[in-house]
Structures are given as structure tokens and as C-alpha cells.
Length: 358
Image (cartoon, rainbow, N blue to C red):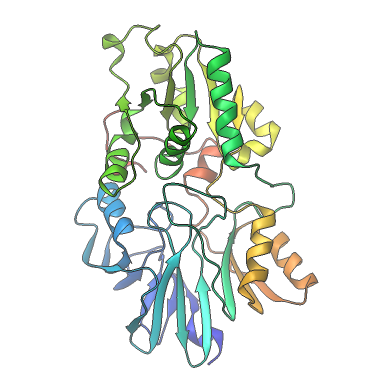
């Protein structure tokens, strides 16, 4: 079977004709397989959804309990028969519940990675390279300039700043799903047992992570301005959606150190543009080296690139004799990490639910 017989591009997104399902569709479809809970991959309105238990729970929090007609939980590593194909979910290491999807039929194996990273993350299962004929990859950081340092070093940088400026609060912009919980978990691993304060828009996902077995320690919602003095947060770490660091909400903190946790902080101009005093290079996407390493480890002879810096990665593949092409899929890559870096991401008002966030 040719790869294009097994998976083809339609206006709704990648479609598997012999299995009659879409993967991370851009529009409502009868049956969707979802790689993870970020809003550019997990949209509401599908007839049926197959995803990991954690991704289904995240979609319910972000999109509402009625986000689809019927839902089915996929177990990592357990093959399932869907129509004329076999489907298996494997860990992607991106955020809690994230999965790659392996599709097999007629001797052809295609892996759709969704988004993924190779850096250790205590909040989710580690990425596993899967042998395949076609590997479908993202390329959010698909340029050689993007080489992420060890995340634990970036967390140590944050704690060093807290120790150096105990009279100041540290306001850290972090994406509400995945990045915020990962930072808290890494802070706990580093021995920081003080309360971590959060913006109200993060409250439900923080609670969900703990419900799903990810301990986060003492998490406290930032009280309303009239309930807290400006000096209350001296020496504290406060996590919030990235754009909140530039909004009226942030004025309740006296002289805060403003930080931003993102792979985009590798580019100093981005940090300066956003007025970030303490850039933290922390990403939930693979950097250039890990993208290239992963492609080699899959043994795939053909690479399809969904979004990001596709042209550079395609060029790298072709120089190594691999068949590669960009899919030019509109609607991916405008997740929180990319959009917030461009200061395009509107955030929910304090107290609003994640499911109502555009």
C-alpha cells in the first residue's frame, strides 16, 4: 500500500480512507483521533473522539463536557483495529496525555507525531521513537539556531534570581496547558517547596493535573487586588498566561521580575520586544537537534512536515537522501507557544475557564 493510500490531506486535515477517520482535524468530522489537548490539535464538535484518557479529560475541561458525540480512551502501546487499519498510540512527551499515532496497513507504517519533545518532563510519559516508513513531524523550532539548554538549568536560573532579589516577586509567563505544570514540577524537584501562585485562568488545569496523578505541591490562586497588599508576593513565584505579564492584572505586584518560559526566548530580540527581564528557554517542542535525531531514529525513508520551519527541515532531509515534503497545514502551530511569542494570544479574564479561551 502506498503511504498516500493510507493517509491523505483533505480540507479537514489528515484523513485515513481505509480507517475512515481524521487525525487532529481542523473542522468537525464524524471521527477524530486526537494527539493531545492543545487547542490547535483538539477542537470540539466531532462526532466521535479517540484519544488517551488524559487528553479526553483535558478536552472536557477546555471545551466543555459535551465537546464531542462519543469518546473512547486509547491505551498507550495497545493496538486497535479501525476499519482496514491498525492504530496504536505511543507517548509523545509533549504534555500530559500526548501521543504519537501509528497507523499500519498493507505493510506500510506511518507515524503522526503530533507535537513532541525529547527533553525529560516529570509531568508526562517520555517520547518513544517508533520505527516506520513515513514519519510526520512538526518543525516549530526547525532551524539550527534553536538548541534548547537543559530545562533544569533554566529552572535553576529562576531560583537563583529569587534568591538574589528576595524583595521582588517573580512573574513568569507560561502556557496554561503543559508548560505551567512542568515548571511547577521542576521547581519541586529542585527543592522549592514554597507556595507557587497562579493566575485564575490556570486554576482548573492545575487541579486536573493533580487529579490525574501529577503532584504539584502548594498551589495558590492569586487573590483579588483588593485582598492582597502590593508587598505580599515579595520572594514569590507567580505563574500566569504570557500576555498577562503586560496587562493591568500584573500591576498588583510591586516591581516584579518579569520572566517568560518559552523556546522562543533563545532569540534575544524576542525577549527584548516583550520586555522580558529574565528569559527562560523552556519549550515543549523538540529543538533542531532533537528533530534531526528523531527522524534518523525512526528509520523512515519519507518525512512529511506539518507546520513550523518546514522548508529548512525538508532541505536537511533531502541532503541526507530522504524523501521529504511540507504539508502546509494551516491552523497548526498557532498554539499557545507560537501565538504568545507573537503577542497574539488573547487570554481569558481572571476566573474565566480555559474552555472559553479563544
